[in-house]
Length: 442
Image (cartoon, rainbow, N blue to C red; front, side):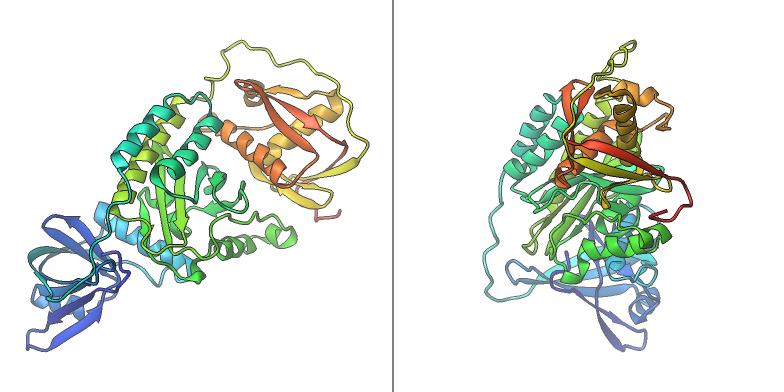
């Protein structure tokens, strides 16, 4: 039902005229029902409304075995979990191709399965299960219980996804609520970390998984589904993006043959998305989707448990300033207030809240010589204008730390304790602030 080999549906008009069509989607509902995608008011849909019986031919891509499902049409759903899953998967693929609004799911046609016939013949044996996924999840939950900070939790999750589930390429993206975007904060198995790469809600497999709060699994894809193109096109729609090169390349595989995106949910709502891809077709099956959904639920609960104030009790004072001796090199840091983007000697570094955080740290360093900071002090600083709820400060600091390493910038954020870090500098800095509305270079 994953569509690796397209399904075929046969219906019959009241006058006996047969109609055979390829299917966009066949969705498993339960042991007695399936759903077929309804995208256009085509002959298939017209026939089943007049005469509610159909046959669907499906082929197992692993063995080559074919099966005929004899179905009875019951209803068309335009809401509910089945419809949302099918809509999200179709929209996720369509957005890669610039076909959003054209490849639109009008409904999920629900059928009762009356009978299944297996085609005769010799076929390949079914592949054996890859591993014991239940044991893997048990080990992961034990490891999560030992994590006391967000960066440790993210690294543990990605490590276990590879070691326990055998998934070599994966990343975690966090939700930026004010911007309606996701930003990559941790990854494993890619040539670059992709820290800071952004995906708008509703765009591609990741954005749709977030927008619809449901897992999306694609078992085969074409090179055109590359996220690098999708992210670039989205950035190009911004007037400021046309002036400044502020798009961080997405770290996903250039030519993924399988993709899966699972929302990370917590009691307060969407936290982010867990994404994995592979250069192997059909890498992620139903069991993998179930396992990653359970893992993402455990991750969301663990993130919620690491509350913003857990790292520092009330009443902890801000650390005192401490003078350091910078390197002999002088670096110009330019800050654009329009979107809090930062440039290091004209090379783009970061933007958004992470950019605002680093700019504030640099201001305190240049003005006060301060290098020691605490998360609590940042939260209370009015210059940042952090939201009262779900500020994701720890995730933004992790993103900033990794982005500085990726760009080989002459400064680093180094943890000095729970909820504390220092700014390590390797140069002298000249700070230049560009106010809102000003053009680059003015």
